[in-house]
Length: 258
Ligand SMILES: [Zn+2]
Image (cartoon, rainbow, N blue to C red; front, side, top):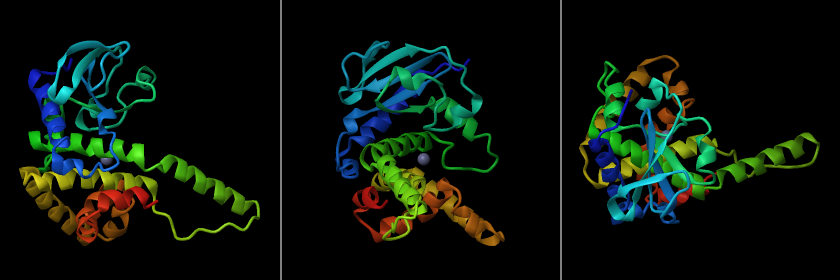
């Protein structure tokens, strides 16, 4: 049994407060972040942080920060251990039907998340409260990018053109498109890193140290540099600072990149 504690709820509230900070809201220039809901889960319930008044199948627990409400829902799913160590993902099958057509993401309780991150022998920046809070910011970035980048429609359009080309019609591309999931990951990583940098957070220092070690190791291995770009997370975290240094309006540019 993994039951969340009050401090787990407070940690999510801290992340929400950061998201709505004026400096951070610049990233979300296309708006609608009030639609993004956070689904904090434990082995018995899902706690939804939402600005809406009343949600079907959910019971209101209390008011939260910045006019958010906390709702609870008793679930019957069995959540795998692995799900407690990461943000996003889908730990509860079928839950999508309950919150149909909504913009939300799942997040485990901070205490469980840190426990699992600490299983890694090597120190990493996600083994602290700050690491957890910035993981929530990262997921906000993903959800916002899903809402505004139209990557699904654009990918569909591209596949249709590819199909036409195989039917013998003369179709071309202007330039080689980047992989949509790499862009998704880059946007999320930058949301998190930009916010951490803005607040001069310890997480930013920890992440920089961690990435230096990681990149040195990659350079030493034979296929490391090439394989680094196969993994969306490694791709995003490796290139994050290079991209942000080149484009100060990265949050607008990335939405149009694909
Ligand atoms: Zn991600």
